[in-house]
Amino acid sequence: MKVKFNDERDVIKLNLCDYNEKSAHAGHRAYATIGTRQVSLTDLKTGLMNLNAQAARKKKALSDEQKKALNATRREIPYSLSSDEWYQVYITVSGDKISCTIDGKEAGSLRSPGIAHETKTWVRLLVPDSICIDDVRFWRKN
Image 1 (cartoon, rainbow, N blue to C red):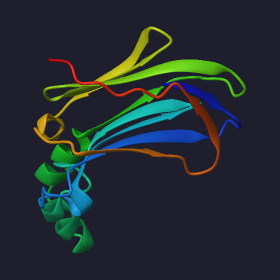
Image 2 (cartoon, rainbow, N blue to C red; image 1 turned 135 degrees about the vertical axis):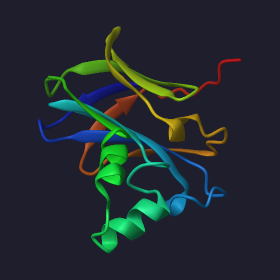
Image 3 (cartoon, one colour; image 1 turned 90 degrees about the horizontal axis):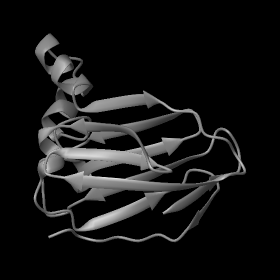
């Protein structure tokens, strides 16, 4: 897709989910969040939206091992983009890896087991404020 930020605080999130999978809240699988200051890639199935992890967090009972495992499900990559400029953005999911490429340069990637979830029945674009989006395309590689 092509993306243009109107303001330096703007972000766009690409959310992958499968409502039939009940191990994570609302079927969340993965997020790719692109903003003017960073790119975030997140495995939600085994990370923040995992129901067991959510229950432990709510009880404030996360073990050090659980905290370490949760940290491994998210990658935040500092990345500088300007507002009022168009960017070509590709989000690619292959097996347990999600990656983000901006204008032909890989911004970053994350490998995590929840990303490999076989079924991703919904792809949602979430825009908290306002952003310009053009030429959105989805395809499956065989």
